Length: 152
Length: 152
Picture 1: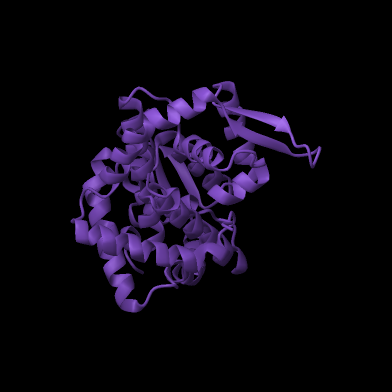
Picture 2: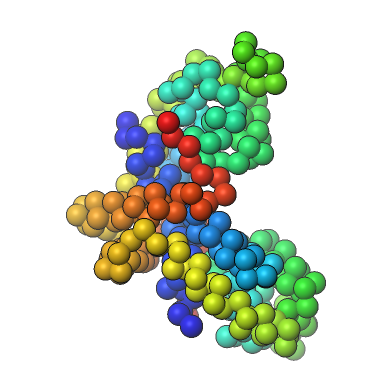
């Protein structure tokens, strides 16, 4: 058997753990309290005002149950609003508040710094190769995942 | 701002989601009911009989709280035993049972198939490049992660 530590599944988890830890550290050091999924949801609603929760879940590839909790916390923090949809009374449409816009702008340098730190061990050329191969692997595997990303 | 979907943090999460989904699908199709972390824990105890929970957590890079739940479920399934340590009365030492050894052997083809499927979109040469860069990035980032892997 292949060494457990050389297996793609183990490496995928380690890289994800490191990415989350770096995100938390950079964002906390900058004085903010947003998790990666809260950030992803808020940033997505900012570019798609009026998006509904189910569409948001598909776009950032989280399942609907997770997204409900994430949206609850962002609403409690005053960063977004949930209103009844004018077209579908069962749906809620999401909008970023002024406070949400301000936090997104203010947090951006920390988020960028985190992205750079995640690949600090690679040369710039290696970063390009790595991200291209990672995207290629993800695109091929996307349909196999339980919360496929829906872009369109 | 960089497109959210091109950021390393987003890609790390997508790849991890896909890896977990593929693991679940392959293992379930083969008739087994083991999550990736249960599998990792069981495989690690098999090669280190008598390991204690804290050391196990460090070796497979999960935090201690997660590992406690994982070990509970593996014990309930009859795949491992937890006994008081002869050296430290607060510690529990773990051993794989005969049923645990059997499931590890039987599940191996499904786990291997899952590892291959995770990188199905890449050529064999690309797989080599990708895994080498992924390991390099992880080794650099390991100390920054909240549950660093302790090998030694």
